[in-house]
Length: 405
Image (cartoon, rainbow, N blue to C red):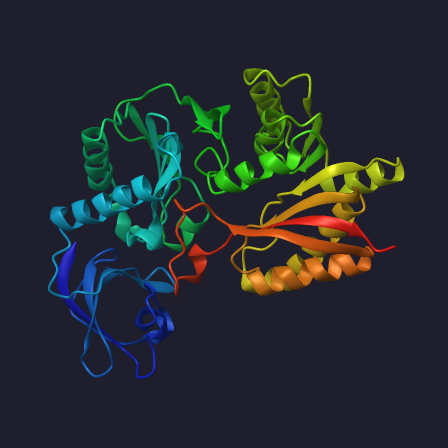
């Protein structure tokens, strides 16, 4: 809750929020004057007393304050939350390519929607909430209630809300993991439609909040590339890229994933879309399987590499570079001359420049020439807030692979 505590920054600190970000770290703070409980909304001043804004404080976290507003005279109340929620919903209605894209999309994306630590995804008529910040705990139920109101006013009925606050980041905030209904229980297997492909999403047991929504338009971009071609989809998860290839008219599609559960889901999704004759999935460790395919003389018109994040910390970036280089080298060896490679990284520590350099090294080592078709990033329902580096994480390249001879 809001109180009158004043947090003053050290001289020369607060560069992130001055540039437009929302985080203040523990080592940037000079003094705290007033009494408060962790999670309370406090006022932030620069070293000279200049008001910087209001945010919630948590002494359990290295991210000591997450800013909610730059206006110190603005009350963080229901009207404030309603304004934030309405803005987030209006933005999605504007930026999604077609209205049916609202069937499954991210409605609130934490800091990028100025509601730090909170994610809300929409799967058909179900909302899935993930709260990763202590200060947001006090607001999440009110925000969900307002969001339902706002969406239903536009004719989008919501039959239930489920919370998937089970990420390890909660521990850094001093929070326990939570998986439970917010409100009345409901059937948590939800059918969604994306790019014309039907999926059954398990919001209780699926990855993250149940599905990876951020690749929506990257999958759509691959439809035209895959039409009439033989495709290999690596780290297929629920079969998303593979099924987009299949529905676009690929002649033969193989999807690989190390998770048996994911392969079962993907296979069922292929049947759901009538693609079981052309789109097939099998359980395999991709890093081990690609050399086996190369040794067997297999070649594909299109190879898609959508691995999990190889690094979730700055310290592990060096090892991640090796991982991305290795997977791209192995993938490139399976692409026919004149074929296509789609490759991506979903770690914000793997910057665009670093990822580009790594792919270039992989191509050089594989004696392949790459002709870039597109560079893409996450879908617009996952907006990138400049100065909030963590909001920019997905880098996605589409190349034609041209023989060096």
